[in-house]
Amino acid sequence: MIKVRSLNVSASHLFENVIAILFALRAITYIWLAFASDIYSPVYADIVMYLRYFTIIAGLAYIVFKQKGFDAKKLTLTIPVIYYYLMLVFNTYGGYQGSYIHEVISIVCFLLMNNKMKQKTFNIFYRLILVTNAISIVLYVLYMVHIRMGFISVPFYNNGIFNEPGALGTVCALLFALTYQKSSLREKAILLMATLFTMSLAGFVLIIAYMVILLAQKSWKYAAIVLALIAFFFMIPQIDWGNEEINRFAKRFAITTQGLAGDDRTSLAVGFDEEYQNLLHSSEAFFGKGATYTADSGASSYKNLIMQFGILGFGIYLILWLYAALKESKGNRECVVFLLVFLISIYQRPVTIVNSYGYMLVFGGFCWYNGLTMHEKKLTTEDALLHELISQ
Image (cartoon, rainbow, N blue to C red):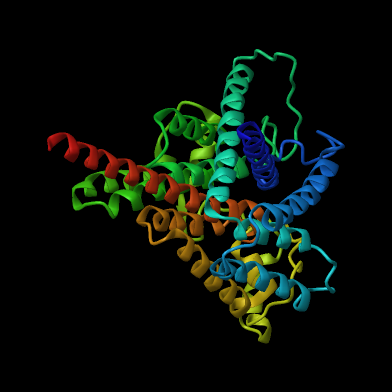
């Protein structure tokens, strides 16, 4: 009898682990862009497609058969994603094409999972990124010292070994902010080094912004450090770093009349900014031109969402999303600080707020953080009780 029970428990844990891995991998496909082109891997798109289907089936199976339903209170967490889907259906440029439905089901399944499962899923997501970052750092150093080890550089957006380095730099910075209070020194070092090697402007800005917010809300004693960080940010483009590539990157931190010199999220899209201004002064300002309107614009900014859904349409989504995120944060101050940093990142990566990766970071990350906090409090309470018993 004991043996049968043990087998059932092992099978249950295996089932949970497989589902957690599937959901973590689904979210990670928005970050692992090294194979997002036929130049790199002709089968990658098929792998992602099947992963989407498996995740939906696994998520539904978990909620129905393993979890046996869900807490009705969690339904409020699904309101933003359902609202966004309705916008796609009823406010779409050129007509609804059937996209995003798989994302809706997957995200809703994830949000309806219990907190323990979300914690497990996020932990796998986080650990996978740490491991691949550690490997990438070693390979990057070998590449820089001209030790090839059989691999080559394949140009994509630039001549480096990264495809879309900004995506990696952004997620590393966000994970650094989210896990800062709970991560080890080694984990912090991996995330910082990965951000450094991507030379991602967004990554650097987000890390500096997090440290400024973190220190500013702690105590006035940190005022000098906060001021030093802000001063350093403004000094970056003025320093000769002894390397032309680094100096060129540093110039992107310069403040101009248009903002950061390196902010090219809309400037490279011909006519986008002019069209955006025209929209704001037209009747389409409220609900935009419809979803997918900016799909081929070449721009990547929060302005994309306003162009598509308007100030009111996007504003409603943002309010619903913030309400759900704050509800999941349980009022934890560190989670709220991370939320501020995450919102800053939306400026240049707006799709994060509507896809699996963004929901994993915020909603999964909050469950992970609060779960560790509760565990620490429990240990502290147990230690106090033990100390009291011993003293008696």
